[in-house]
Image (tube, rainbow, N blue to C red; front, side):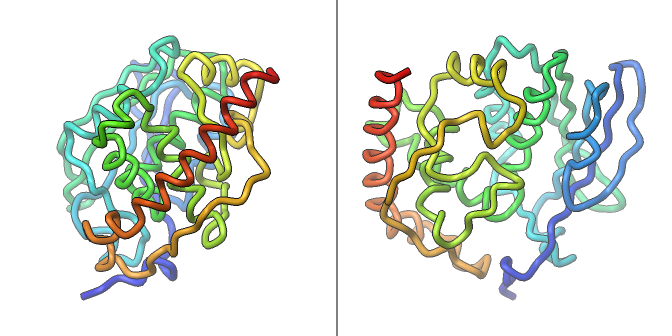
Length: 245
């Protein structure tokens, strides 16, 4: 059975507290809105459904990644941010899930927003597709030293004409930054969409598939040249941006 992801809704299961010693009250909703607006949240618990559990309930969520890959996902965060994470297998209301515990010991609220946004990329459509293909790009020799977040933003840009809704992600047409530059940017700004510089550029585009069954290895192969061309454009813009700043 196929799943028309473009007509499904969003759904997250999460809770937060201001201390590692407290147990969070889990809430469900379309986004991390209450966590984003909190000025005291420090520790977060997030449940990510395994398999097609959320698709069966008409939510646009699917986690393509293993527990090991999820842990690696959090290792990509800047070490300066003092983010502790734990990923375990669990159940939530009868659903098999990955339980993600985050301890973000920082008074900089943008860091909290960044980490939660990065977490969302693990399961929410179409950002989970962007991450899946970014990880495939990372396996190519030419991207050995490029960061996953930059590759993620490159993939997102190729779908900018088809899906340009930056409420739940970082945005499109974004420049490449080092981890050090990301740290500096999060000191200067307050919004997730301002972390990466945005360029006024035209890049080749991919068509975002609408059905879950279309997410195949062939899809990546078909889109690869577009990703490579887009990366070249964005990387050149990023080099010029650094020269001016």
